[in-house]
Image (tube, rainbow, N blue to C red; front, top):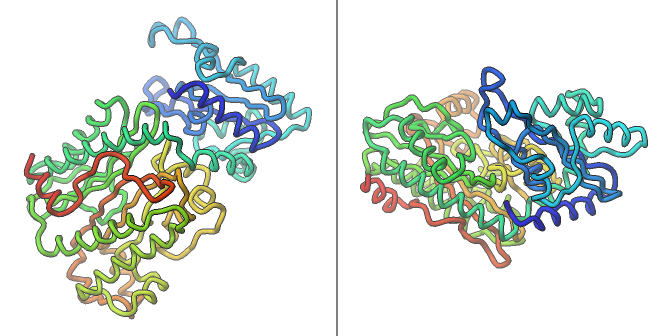
Amino acid sequence: MFPKVTYINRRKKLKETVGNGIILLPGNNESPMNYADNTYHFRQDSSFLYFLGINHPFLAGFIDCDSGEEWIFGNDYTIDDFVWMGPLPSIAEQASEYGITLTGTIADLEIKIKSAQTSGRTIHFLPPYRPENKIKLFEWIRIPPDNQADKASLPLVKAVVDQRNYKSDEEVAEIIKAANTSVDMHTLAMRMAKPGVTEAQIAAAVQEVAVAAGGQTSFPIIATVNGQTLHNHYHGNTLKNGDMFLLDAGAETGMGYCADLSSTVPVNGKFDSRQRDIFNIALDSHNTSIEMLQPGIPFKEVYFKSAAVIFQGMKDLGIAKGNVDDALANGAHAMFFPCGLGHMMGLDVHDMEDLGEVYVGYGGEAKSTQFGLKSLRLGRTLEPGFVLTIEPGIYFIPELIDLWKSKGHNAEFLNFNKLEEYRNFGGLRNEEDFLITDTGYKLLGKPKPKSIEDVESEWKKG
């Protein structure tokens, strides 16, 4: 945990920003896999962690903006629980560590909520994403689950986003820990990516690194020879000569802070000429994007520059044609680059995605609906304290090629005959994590091998 004063100050600022009413923050419950006592790894809600700190299930926070009172509600464990889990601190003891002196049971919470409703007070809550919290809100404040997203408090959403988007020095230090562990995960994968090794073996080894460091992975591991599938969680293939292996994986620290890195490595240790060409175009886009990072620049500008580098590279190979600016305006680059350039990161690997990208990544500005551009999670002007990823990639997706070719979509910008030669190429990307500083940017964590020379050299160490 951070010092107690950190959490006290976070809540103080939140109360001042929201201004009035009750802030209700339900924590997460244990989530059963196949029966009640066999649960998934517990992960506390990130906003609950940020403001209240306690990483235990079955709790709720109650913050009164008018009186200033701060409560933690939950039922203490019984002797039956202690038999299975050992002695555990009381809720009052846990709350005290984070500067909260008022506690009660869940039944007490229900009484407090009814009293607030009877008095006509506003109850602020965030849009729930877990089914059990939707049920809690229905039971406590009688809002049907289907209406809860619309009834969630926009003032609270904006207040939480405006606090969590700006990372403090202590948060950055924690993210750096996650990033350093993540680099170790990726270098191990590069050394393991040999013919005859399975995707599952690499995924298992990578996860071991994260767990051994005292945390978990920050999202399900992407470990695949089919890099053209952007979020590929299937691990059933065996690596063979000619494949490229893509790893997208990050560590989460014991405090819940995340990192997110991607790497691509040739399975036989040497990129062939086509792989080198495509890899270097993506790397040029990646490095160009990094060089643009500074306060005051709209991230959309960084995205379009990265896309321009990729499209020009495709032109140089004869796969694309026409004016680059016109091609980008028409979305032709999305044939190779159908995803965003990066996203905010912190206590969530896609930070606060549950609160809405329009607020987190766009500051309230409407997102584009154009294919490719609509997947850009971050488009707002960059500010000091933002932590974000940079991850341009190049992907040859057979189904997308077939669809656009059949419709003649963007035919003035794409050489479909040449594109056919790459339909089985796959996909690749590099990804790193950055802090926006007062004067520019800072790479978070130690450098990851990302040039062709560095990746091939790392492979040889296996």
